[in-house]
Amino acid sequence: MARAEKVAAVAELTERFQSSSGAVLAEYRGLTVAQLADLRHALGEQATFSVVKNTLTKLAAAEAGIAAELDGLLVGPSAIAFVKGDVVEAAKGLRDFARANPALVIKGGVIDGQPMSPSEIARLAELESREVLLAMLAGAMKASMENAAATLAALPVQMARLAGALQAQRDADGAAGAGPAGTDQTPTGTPNDEAVADTAAADQDQTEE
Image 1 (tube, one colour):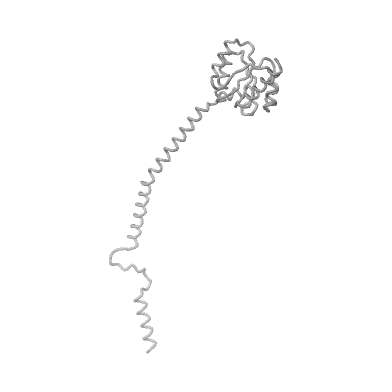
Image 2: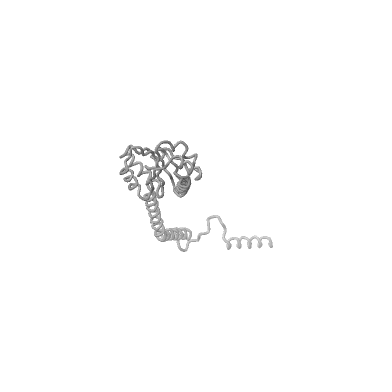
């Protein structure tokens, strides 16, 4: 490969590393051209799958700032799945294809700037996809809104019941304080105003005498 071609290839790989949400490295030794085509079709819009040269990919990884994350993975025949869409869906596609075609061996990769081992990529494939998680979140939010609406709708009824209970309590307290009609409610042993006045007048008369 001429130097100009190498420079262009490194620049293209660097751009793909930088513009992708993840890159999964795999060994494809033993896969036929037809199988590779099937893999690309299975990945669809989630990722592109490209056979790469290790030396050029190392240079591109260094320029993209992820050389350490890919250290030790660029050995032997290498191909990279550059993830463009949902990383979970891309991991599922690679896992399912590898199960049906053991010649595809996942070596590891980098997702959102974090190095990922083959086992971590396998666990990633077990997660729900972004669409499923969003649907679950929307369902939970809808349920919460419906519960809130039901609570708000019940408030007027609850407030009316509370007001009625308070009024009934006030009426009961008022009736207990009034006592039977015509009965003097002055507590026993407590002089009323007229009794106090009579006593004062009697004391005054005794003083004058």
